[in-house]
Amino acid sequence: MTLSNQERSRRTKQLIGVWLRRVGEPFIIIVLAIPALQLAYDSFWGPFLADPFPPATRISGIWGMRLLVAGLAITPLARMTGLAAIIRFRRPVGLWAAAYSIGHFAIWSLDYGFDLSLITTEILRLRYLFVGFIATVMLVPLAATSFNAAIRWVGGRNWRRLHWLVYPSVLLALWHMATAGRLSGVDFTIMSVVTGLALLWRVARALPKLSTAR
Amino acid sequence: MLIKRKRGWEMPERDATPEALFLDRRNLLKGAAAGGILASAGWFGLGRAEAAGEPDPSASLYPAKANAAYALDRPVTAEKLATGYNNFYEFGTDKDIVDRSQALKIRPWTIKLDGMVEQEQTLGIDDLFKKMPFEERLYRHRCVEAWSMAVPWTGFPLKALVDLAKPTSGAKYMRMETFEDPGMAPGQKQFWYPWPYVEGLTMAEATNELAFMVTGIYGKPLPTQNGAPLRLATPWKYGFKSVKSIVRFSFVADRPKTMWQTLAADEYGFWANVNPDVPHPRWSQATERFLGQSGRRPTLLFNGYAEQVAGLYKGLEGEKLYM
Ligand code: HEM
Image 1 (cartoon, each protein chain N blue to C red):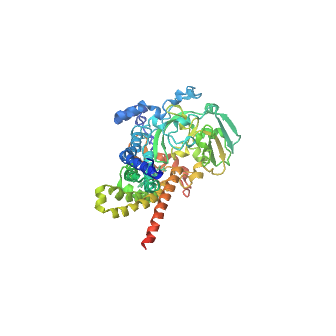
Image 2 (tube, each protein chain N blue to C red):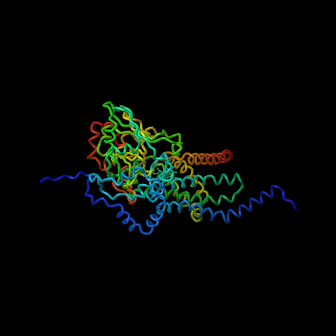
Image 3 (cartoon, rainbow over the protein chains, first blue to last red):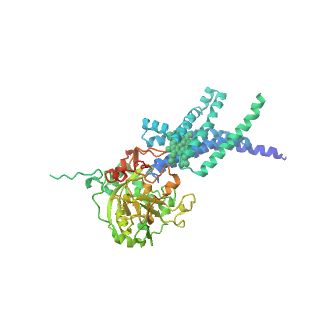
């Protein structure tokens, strides 16, 4: 018995899908904890010991940004490659993105001793902090509704609408990153390009739907 | 009865904690974790200079006599921190440049004194050292990035070098320049930085008693990462003014444009005097993180040296003195 090329590729994808589900998801969850563990190690026992706040702020922010952007890219990648199973990675990647971003804010706040009036003053005084803060605030409802029970509670349709918030959040975070100072050009370029492509892809898909709805 | 009033920055010597004691105390506080770090001090480049083997030709100058007039209101920073956490963009933009900076060859090293001087001079660094009055001073050091430390510097007053150079009356500023050699300093291959590193002082600042040429730290010759073999310490200004590994002093009529002014004039200006009330465009300068201590401490006007230097800025109120 010979399989058509089409059938063979369908089966391969199915197999990859099964593996991605069984091994891939737990693997992603664990792997994305590594930068946090490394950061904790470097800060408390390693090379950042002398003055951990600047590198810890920086590195947590960069990982928040990387994962936010990676999260955006998953759905387009899944559709384009036909590997629908990687959609499952959206949740762990998105949750870790929120964790690193909120952690970044927490580290910065800890640097100022969690002094609420000082933190408020600084966020209101400096635009790049304000922009980053709004980006962070937008991520909170997304992270909070990442669990099946929460999705059921808000309803699938509302949940999807709510998650459009991720776009303004990432755009604000990119703006924040670009104006935060020590811009790492390579990282920033990659993140902007990926964000731009993911956005274009969404818009391109949404357009025909909008026109048929009319 | 004659009572000598102590100036703000003068403290009884006993208040300056000896380094060893300070390390012990930190060890006790931090417990096993800090112990582990000390055991693996390689991270901080401890003992690297000695490991290199070649004796420093200026080693006999150390330890120099301490000048008791320059004491501290806080403990001296642990040596492994002060010699392991360094801004030196010539070797990289992060603080971990200790290893890379070992490539800096500090002998032979010549110093040029030029510009508006009676006669231009080029001196070997050790010949210069022979002419200078060495001493040790305890100084605070405040980085513009809001971290700080307190270190025992060895060196000589910048004024002694100015006197040696004999500037003419037209000289209004002193321009200082770091070595330029991308072969030794990979950071200098980054073409978007306007190398070499240039800094400057007014003649009044350069001849102020606090302006200090540094050749050593913790009673030993400077390690490369701290700016060997000759760097500046202007403790009332943000650290980036304290140019490292200097090869040239020029006496000039016009205000020199510093490297950081070329890069970001609105963030790092010519004056750069420490002032807690004038924030950096991206962060507050009201407080600082003292290396090795948790929490922040208040930043002092002119980093606590107002009595020495505030007078230098009379009549300059229109300038951006704190940027
Ligand atoms: C979605 C939320 C956020 C993300 C993804 C994010 C990400 C980033 C990134 C990528 C950088 C640049 C790091 C570098 O290139 O060196 C950065 C810098 C910075 N962020 Fe955020 N940020 C967020 C929110 C915030 C908030 C709420 C604050 C504080 C109110 C904050 C404070 C800072 C500071 C102080 C820096 C400068 C760090 C430095 O100078 O190295 N960020 N952030």
